[in-house]
Image (cartoon, rainbow, N blue to C red; front, side, top):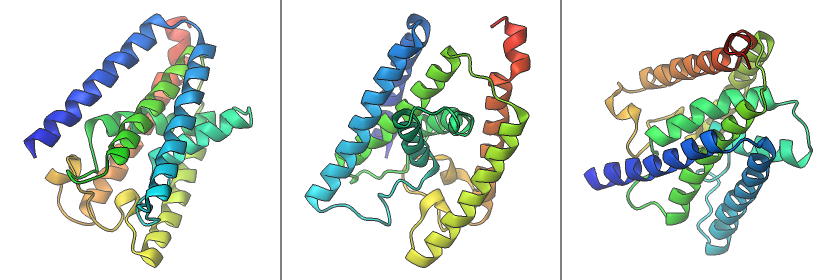
Length: 221
């Protein structure tokens, strides 16, 4: 267990340093846009193609139904269709989701290498998207915050229903995730789930304050 814990934080520390370097050194959002597009296509295609080809794909585990993976798909679709309409919702999911993925893991020691690669690259992509949005001087509004919160609540309800019908555990609505994560020190169902929801709401609010018009004007951006 200690080795898994150490390896996880070693990898995420290296990825964090890369993100810090990109944030402070890159002045061109379009370069970030191109890099993000490449990494999204690479991550999503290799993950799904490998699992399907190797016969390891399990729709109860590998569908992109966790919020972070849904967000990653949403970012790629926004790039593909050249639309910024969902940027607010995607940003609110990305910053907190990316940080959460760097601080927690829902994978076990016997998980496939491609699953580990997917975990790290997916959350790296979410944080890279957040940097791209910041460099693009995107502004979040209260209306976007409210709509995104309600939209996530609706998705959450659908996921609960999906998990009931297929005995899956997306969004961890039925039991705690495996691996090294915050739920290890939280009480059982439904209390750990309530804590996760509260953390998600706090993350949304903090992201909103960081990218709100007031903070940007105050910072002189």
